[in-house]
Amino acid sequence: MLLTGLGVFAAGALLSALANGLPVLLAGRAVSGAGAALLVPATMSVLLHAAPPDRKAGAVAAWSAAVGIGGMVGNAGGALILQYLPWQGLFWAYVPVALALPAWVAKSAPRVPRQTAALDLPGSALLVLGAAAPLFGIIEGPGLGWTSAPVTGAFALALVLFAVFVRHGLRAAHPVLDPRLFRLPRLRAGSIGIAVTFFGMFALFYVNAQFLQYVKGYSPLQTGCAIVPLAFGMMAVTKYGMRWAARAGEARTVGVGLALIAAGLLPLSTADVGTPYLLYLAFLLAMSAGAGLAMPTLSHAIVASSPTP
Image (cartoon, rainbow, N blue to C red):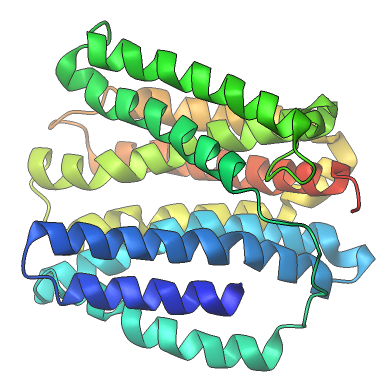
């Protein structure tokens, strides 16, 4: 699955690079998204299989940090490419990386034993549609109005789809995601915490480049460099996050992490053209420190509390 995901992702990047119009570009991005959906869960599965029991916590911490840092580095690298190359360079840059990684994975990754469970296609479809509906509402809410019929209808549809998904999951022999897992308090709290953390971090990635370029007047290269300290801040805190969780407790560590994320995002929402970059950077660093504390601890809580199949 990991090798297949890398191949599909590379194919999507190649299609996007060769796109001569918006429909082909959207198709290429959809193919890349499908590849990412295959490879990201597989990375965690292979990692947990490869790590010895006494190092699983550190492995999960490294994985969760890599996800956040990858988003930051992607922003910076994309800005560097856009500064000197056409937009197609964004996708051409992925192609050699996605072609080189399979050779490394094939050589280094252990072979995980196969499972016999059947694919849950109806459950997967319900989960995808249930996630797409609120995304539509969140994206279109500011433009159409939060009380407009399409937006409120999207949120209502999401509730219906997730209710049907839960009903299906309780009855299916091999559900794609068993709703009964969320009866486990530690897993439920970890899942909600990860969702909140990722929502805050990746929402920032979505608006950060637009703010720095169109409001502050930064070049693409300046914009990419402006977010690089986020990665260093997160790496520095992640290194010690799991140790703090072992000493102070998971709940306290996650609470401090989420509070720091909020303490960074709240003043960021007030930034305008007159906000000095050093002050903006302080907000970013507070958020990255919070993510470095919360994400590894929450990810480990989910993995550690999941029942062994």
